[in-house]
Length: 177
Image (cartoon, rainbow, N blue to C red; front, side):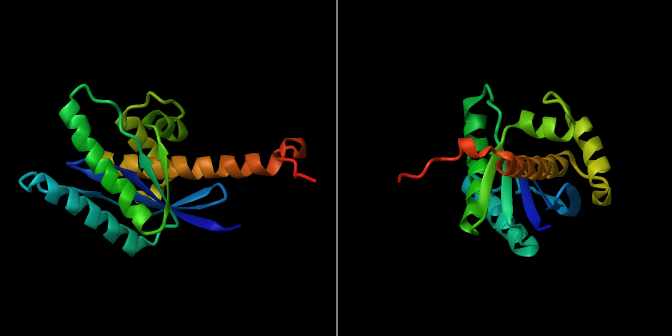
């Protein structure tokens, strides 16, 4: 059984959570987690650069095979949504630049994968991260969300593999004769 190392990212301009897990079949294990928090006093472009550089450093330190990023929810404040979109771009581009495949998951999908309901709150996600990855110890909400994104990706990978394995031959594309 092969293992895959997954980097989960929960992007934010003030705090970007990250978490790395290893998935081996249905077994998940914690590798590392943390939060990237650029100084609010930095100019906007420099805050984005801090995010990008720090994500690259996480990738260099933990050598993930794949990355998963939480999609942003729509904010009523257009300026805030745009700034969050910039932070999310750093979370997408840094792993892509490192040659990783990058998957994206809606927050409701992540919560459902970890807690069982898409409407779970941050406390419920944190609780389940402590149960699913006991060696992670206490995590901040941002790091717990990032680990949850990585777990959602691990579950989605497994589901895709099972679907591919049990797909009937009748659904396979026909070759031209």
